[in-house]
Image (cartoon, rainbow, N blue to C red; front, side, top):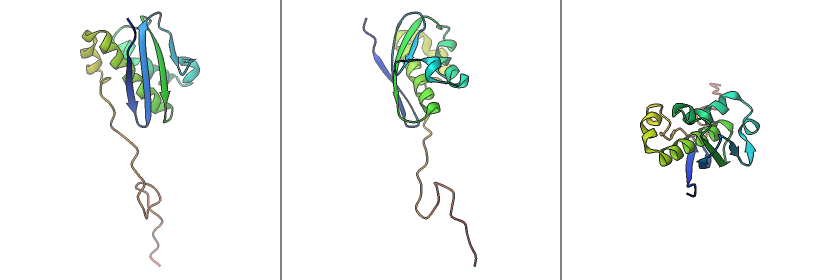
Length: 128
C-alpha cells in the first residue's frame, strides 16, 4: 500500500504528511523531529495526535512543511497527522475529534489598514 499525502494548514503554513507503518520515526523536511523543533512544546504539539490515539511508535511520518513560523508549522503538521491517522483507521476519528485535532484553526493575521500603523494600532493622536 502506497502512503497517501494528507495536507494540514495553520496560519500561512502548509504541511504535506505521509504516514506508513514503522517504528515512530518522524522526518520533517528530511530532518528528525527533535532537530527541526527546538522547543518541547512544539514537539509535543506535533506528537499529540499519536498520544491521543495511543499509536506512539506504530507509524513513521515523512513531512514536508513550508511557510509561516514554528508555531504555524507545528499546528499544520498536527492537523496533517490527524487526517492521515483517520485515513488509515476510521475508528480513531471520534477520539481525534474529541480532542479537537481534526478542526482547522481559522485564525489568520489581520491585514494592515491604511492610515494606521498596523492592523489595529493607530498613529499617535495629537490634539494640537
